[in-house]
Length: 125
Image (tube, rainbow, N blue to C red; front, side):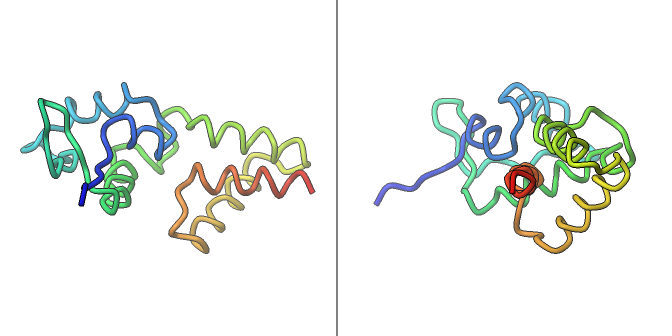
């Protein structure tokens, strides 16, 4: 039976970031640093691979980056689209941010990009 792994591109797509972002994380946060990027489960010809069930671990790693959750950094493309749609429906920035946070608590199994897409879809009704 063939085992399937997520490569850098698979992780990037699942997290709604570029593969370049994943490469930067791996180089900026190597093993032995204060916040090391999760080590791959396998490496084939220099290409890393992670088991799909470790995606949540990687999402939690990203959420623990310095400055995340403290208003730092640029919002993801998914969050930007969500905010645009929320404001078009009459929510101000604070209301939209609180709503997203509340849904994230209620649906912890969903990533932020998944939540944003789901909410945007609901705005259309």
